Length: 352
Ligand code: 5GP
Ligand code: MN
Image 1: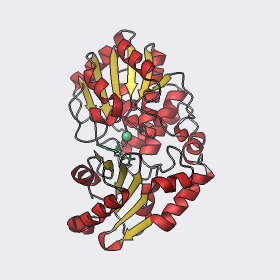
Image 2: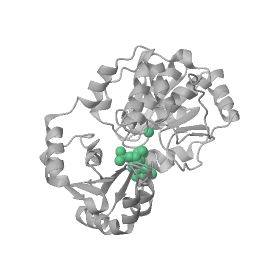
Image 3: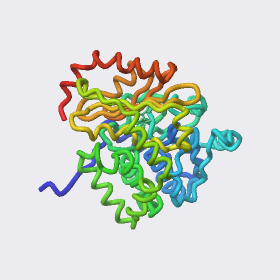
């Protein structure tokens, strides 16, 4: 019979879970939860979901984000205080000062918290990491790092059950965790080969979550300008290299301005070229104030994280990574095309 799925955390020993259980279940604490810089749906969904559950149990919880996050993630119903460190350093510092415990969600090294990175390293009380990115830096007292998981949100659901806090899950918490799974799988398009992902989703459904409301909140909430920017990028800015099975889109600051760019507008653009038959590697370069932000996506076994780490000072998952370049947009794009021959064999050998 295969109707029983036993969830095993591959990297996390029982002693870690037992310690975390004791820490979180024995006293009322001041907890600060930190997602990564430029938080995405999984970072924010994980932070809010976990915060709700811990607050329901009786902890005093603050979320401190390194910077702002997109409008399409601001529809959550949550009682938890969210401090944007970029805007309110005083409140952020005070939350850190009062904290008994830090919980780091959805990232694997302190530098991914941007301006908060130093504060994370300096924090001298208990630090717990909950994450699904490969190759974590060992900077927390308790590292729960499980790269097999689709999302940190899916992992949080399992941990909450393993440490006996499941009776504090509410609809609001479940909706936040569901959003993390939804967005990190590209609406169940990738990273969905493990039965556990759907098992967790079905468990979350039992809390009465409104999946259509979430779908609308996340994916049907764009401005007309964002849709026009997408059309412009695909029509005029996408360059396809069929001989390398790759495609690249570059967007300048000027072009963003033309379409009245708002934070989050370019989210998901990098995925579109992967819908072209035979394309396995897609890249998006966006010109920011002092650097060019790079996003990498792939299909099959082409390692975007290796590419990002070696050439664009970044990292991430096998199929989804990010990085940056200090060169101009034009020079960055030229650097990329010059790298393609080096990766030709790997790209042509990629099985999809
Ligand atoms: P995105 O392209 O959506 O910004 O990021 C995709 C993935 O790569 C995410 O899992 C994100 O955490 C990771 N990532 C994005 N930018 C960076 C970066 O500069 N450094 C590292 N190590 N990972 C990144
Ligand atoms: Mn994630």
